[in-house]
Length: 399
Image (cartoon, rainbow, N blue to C red; front, top):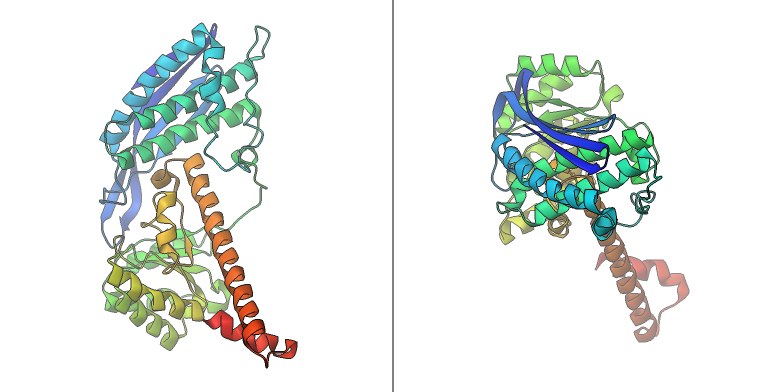
C-alpha cells in the first residue's frame, strides 16, 4: 500500500506500508502468549533521494497493554495519509499557510529535547533541497498529530502505528541532516549494554537460547510465569551454567504481570536461599496491569523487600502514557517507556519529562517536610541543640 505526495514543485515523496512477518528462531514465550511468527509492519518514507523506515512491533493483542495489530496499522495508515495529502496540498499552494502547524510539532515535548529542530525556517524560492525536505518532514509530523486527534477508533490502537510512522519521519530527517537520532533529540551518544531475551519455554530450549544470546551480550532478560516451581527450576538451570561473578547484576526477570504479591515474596525468599539475588538487577512487571486499591497496598512492602536486597522493580505493561507514572511510584523503583505503547519518540519524551517532574516534586516535598519538622523541633523543644540535629532529622525522615 503506497501513497504519493507533492510538497513543493519538483519535490515529491511517498509513504508505503508493507506487512513484515518475522519467522522466529525459536518460539517466543511469555506468561500470556507464545508465538513462532510475529506479524509486524514496516512504514517507508521516501522524500527526494532520502529514505526513512519505521517498524511497528506487534505482540499478540492484550487488553490495556498491546492494542494494535496489522489491521489497526492499515487503518491508521489510511487515516494518516488522507490527512497528509490535504496538508501537502496546502503546502504546495502556500508553504506559509502551514507555518503555525509545522512550528508546533515539538510544542508538547520538553524544551530540552530536539533543540536544533524547533526553529522552523521560512521557505524561499532559493531555499535548498535540504531546507525544503526538513519543512516537508515537519508537515508529515503535523499531519500525524492532527490525524491522531481526529482518529475515530481507540486512542490506544493508534499509538503503535503512530510510533512507527514517526520513526520513519525521524529516520528520513536524520538522512537529510546527516545526524543520528540521539543528536537530533539533544542527547550525548554513548554505548550502553542491552538485554537479550530468554523467552519462556522448556528448560533445554531456554538454555540453548541463552547460549546463543551470550555471543552478543552478557545481559539476559529471563521470562518467567506464574508457576513458581517451574520458575525456580528455570533459574537454577540457567545459573548453574555460568560464573556468577561474571554476570553479577546482569540479569533481569520479566514476569509479564503474572505474579501476586505473595508469589513475588516467595520468589525473593528463593533468591535469598539460593544466593541468586547477586545475579539479578531488576524484576520487570511482576504485578498485574490493573490493581485494586488493596492490591496496590499489598505490593508496597514487596518493593521495599526487593530494594533491601539490591533488586529493583520496574513497571512495563502498566506504563502506556505519562498519566500512568504517578500511580506506580509506591510499588516500582522505575518504569520502562516503550515507543509503541507511548506513541513515538515525542510522546515517550513527555513521559521522561513527567517522570523528572515527579522526582523533583517528591524531592521538594521531602525537603519541605524536613525543614518544617526541623523548625518544629527547634521551636517546640527547649532541649534541642545543634549537636542533636542528626538524631532529630533521622526521626523526622523516618516519619
